[in-house]
Length: 200
Image (cartoon, rainbow, N blue to C red; front, side, top):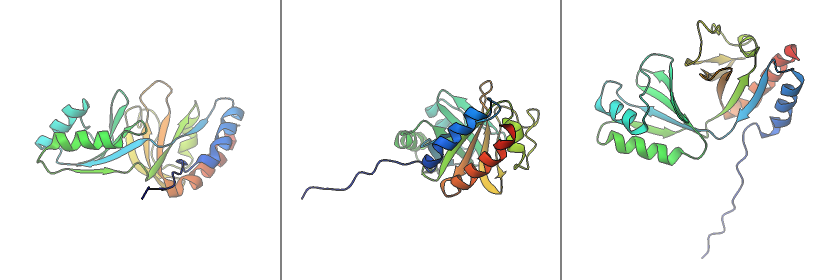
């Protein structure tokens, strides 16, 4: 019997906000720009940072796992975020989950490692522009001054009472990634749009 399963197109958690985010960007005179980066590959990796698997995985990915707390390492389109002494989040373009998982498992071999695809758990908001720091500072308890939270930094924190992973991007004027659980994405988008009204 033929399989007649319905194929439903993917819909991002913030699809209904696309026009509002774009409108805020147009009216803010470039002070703040907001956009969703939907469907990024996100793979959570747990292993012993001092064990053989950490080095093997780093070699296989051509990206050493960051060992300094709250730091980011980037190589090409792959980004590794330090989340804890034995935990990292790997972020890559959409659709690379299986390949990334396979490479990590193969590199780790018999060493203990946990590899979990969490791509559907979160979406990513891009916050850029000259006033991006100011906008995020309205609702984030961290010191976001570039001296304290400059490029190549990340943190698990809150923004507008929502748990997020915040990443200071390393390219010039690249702004921030705000990784938020899909179930809270709409609330956070509303909060950002409201807070950004000050810069319109």
